[in-house]
Image (cartoon, rainbow, N blue to C red):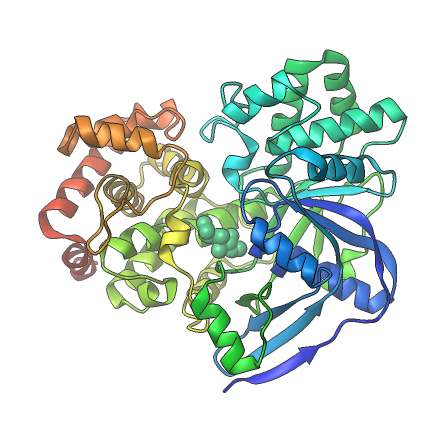
Length: 485
Ligand code: CS2
């Protein structure tokens, strides 16, 4: 049984000053924990949260309401040490999936002058951007809807824009928009989504957004697996915690934020948040080393018969492969933030992945690959090719991704991947196979930027990896690779 350190909350209530879109496990275990620590320190304040789910998980919102927004976060250092935190800064929980009065409540809360910051974790696809170019997709069904009926928006950019429009009409200064999703240059991308929608709707509003709204970028990091029945059972057995809104995560946590909050912000720095002028070096480091490795572990690990990150990284051949990727294909593309040593960062990541108290499912990470691959692997692959370096690990990742998107895995009746492009994948898989199938995937413009997909060296590397994978199977292929390095 682990040793449990309990961290209670202080009694005072925090007034709502931040509205958050995307009330998932990550938000509850990352941002809410920083705000709770800050609240515990000051004992009162105006940085409480109103958090909303836009599409999925109404049940969680109802559960949280039953608990008056109170829930527990279990931070596992390892099997032996856990910190159990009590969270009370979540003052309001909303589900706006069906539109109606909760959407209106959310918009009013966002338009309220007390709301100074709007944060988002709506996943990469929630911004309705083309992942390869970062441009708003005006043909995205949610955007088409929001252009037709801006007063009752469905998309995250649509909701942010409608709230800003109301503030402008009422003469209330704009809130600051802080994207907390794993995208490159995430502040700038969020600006592109909101400004792109504004430009298609109302040029005066677009100009106001351009001039008045701050979109600082930030890098967020904490491994927070989705909760499942097994995780709840473990909390009950090990910690006597019966909270149906609880979250399990690792002890490690990092947040690096660009310090541009014209309407004020919590004094986050006292909780260890790094406030910086330019977050991009941190972002790229994390996207390519952590998330890039995660996605390799996901597609390659699933094909090698593993289920969780812990299992995959415990496979010595896969561990050797990940180390090789980090050292030879991620590190050379990075302009590391001052004071961070790439070898040490990479070593620490392998230790974090090996935390066996977290059941981090590879299938969860494998989701939405079309949205994740550009920033995790492909931008780096372009740089490697320009420098005349090899892209073997990334090419095997792409081949494994194509395979997982088109072949049901053993023991599963369905394709494992949930992806906004899954209908396209099924269509391609029905029409092509072998080298033609690979070519058809590499032609997907939303994923592969033309500068990369037109390079013969890139296509040849992926085709070669796909053939090897089909011929020998993933486990044997990894063994062969390990024997040759
Ligand atoms: C993961 C991330 O699901 C995924 O794609 O790579 O959620 C990862 O766990 C976090 O970014 C860690 O900070």
